[in-house]
Amino acid sequence: MEEVKEHSIWFGMEQEYTLLGVDGHPFNWPSNGYPAPQGPYYCGVGAQNAFGRDIVECHYKACLYAGIKIYGTNAEVMPSQWEFQVGPCEGIEMGDHLWVARFLLYRVCEDFGVVATLDPKPVTGNWNGAGCHTNVSTYKMREEGGLPYIEEAIDRLSKRH
Figure 1 (cartoon, rainbow, N blue to C red):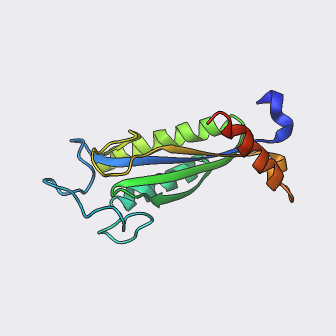
Figure 2 (tube, rainbow, N blue to C red):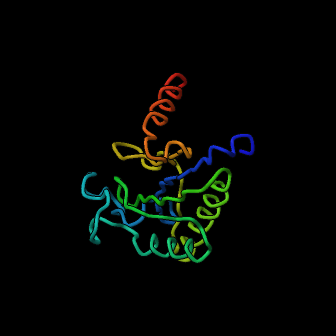
């Protein structure tokens, strides 16, 4: 990062995770079956759509208290699946914020008697998986007239996709 410091590279990470009971079954799912199909859960509200919001909000507050650059949360496509966003962070600072945010997630879940997993496919079948999306920009991309720099980066990255 020192070699490219003049580009002021910012990173944002979107960490998806799934809440499970200590038995490994998705949190708040029926014990002998499945919840309603995917659809109403993404960014959902209400107890029938958002499983574990109290856990998510406690994690968010713990991150704020610890000085983590957290800037949002949302319910994901699969019930009991959530996401938190960390950043923007310059350079390798992102790694510290993401790892401590993950630690705090595990610690808060422990207090609630549940488990958070980063498993990319915690439930088999037609249920969405989880990932960690990365957003990146340079100083030139963020300035007025930065679109050509964004397009150039996309073109260069597309050659190794």
